[in-house]
Image (cartoon, rainbow, N blue to C red; front, top):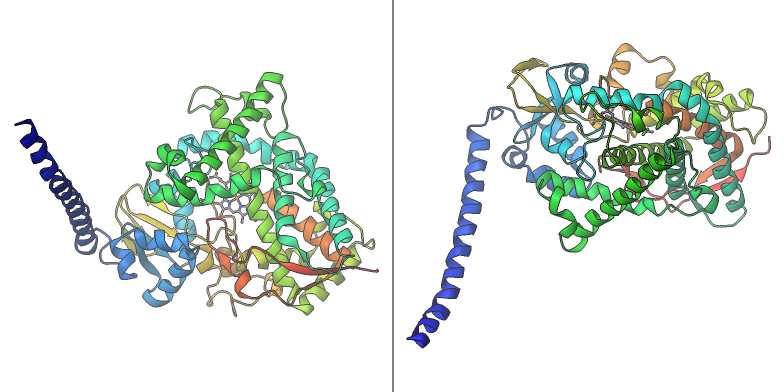
Length: 501
Ligand code: HEM
């Protein structure tokens, strides 16, 4: 009897396992099939055109995200399907710049759930990821002091000193025969600036010529938000996942522990910085209390991410755009030489702000290489009409800078790097140019970024004659869309020579 029972089991087990597996597979594919059929035939956005796969599943966007190509695929889809297209079952992309203000300046839209929930860094909301307008407003009030003109003016000498350190390092390296890869240096610069602004401590990556231990952790965040967009449960379980997926989450966890330690030490030792002064003890009125160490740590992590790669990549693209156009370099250098006779100058941000050609170079860089090239999705909180289209409550809509900044009806020869177009821009160009977005969710760090970039570009072109290493290809410098876009090749090799006069 005992034997027959155990035999029965051993016969049934594989069969039962097979049955279960088959059921799971059928339920999985069956339910997905139903979702696909619903998305195609019954969904409120079913009438909008778009790539067939994108209209029935979010996997289209996920797949291209993993390859850093989503923004480019959406751009191509606009060329094929028109100005309002469906690029995920519940997401429309608009290519008419007039819609920018209608979406991003309007109370009819809030940040979209899946995309921004995935942008939480490690389980807390931070300024970028808040969806609720009232909660966001309170947090922005606490953080705005850190980015105010007064704080930035006080901090400007630290930026100048980092520009000087960076250019001195490159002066030394330029004496060797090899080309200099300016890409990692630009990232060290961006990181040192934002870290020093937040914590009042110079991490000295530039002085050491070696990136901070935090940088690899920070880079690990990018893949984790792609995973979380598809599988939100990973926010909780990610660190236990096997392989590279788990490793990325564990790196973000290490970064979080590091940030919590710093914040805790500030509180325990009663230290502060102009950046942190309001946010360390101030009451977040929507919470009715000051931020916890964990919440404040994630704000600082958001700042480190938002403030480093964006500025660094913009500088790298400014060099790439400018150095391939000798006429642009000539105009820029002439303007700088007239303004600053000393080749070693680190000019002030105010003086740089007065130079039209320098500012045109920066604007053209931000137009052609806006580091946030991706669509920024917003959810309609009520039925509304947008660019003539009926948008039902709950639908997501958005615009991407890659598309509107290259709109050929507004910017002639849109793929050319042509700073001259900014010397006398028309109204349509001003409307379509939104590298920092607009409205209550526009970039909080735009003044800091522009200050850094103006001073750095001016000091670089005053000090060096530069040329691009012939091994560099166009392909390497194409934009990799990873929310904050960077050059695909992750390098820019330059030869530098000190300017004589
Ligand atoms: C060239 C440099 C930069 C560009 C092109 C840029 C672009 C943008 C854009 C387009 C947004 C809107 C994102 C959205 O709606 O989802 C944004 C938001 C934000 N940026 Fe920047 N950014 C730059 C530099 C900086 C710097 C230096 C910081 C400093 C920490 C920063 C911190 C932030 C934060 C915290 C937000 C969220 C603001 C909010 O939701 O209230 N960014 N940025």
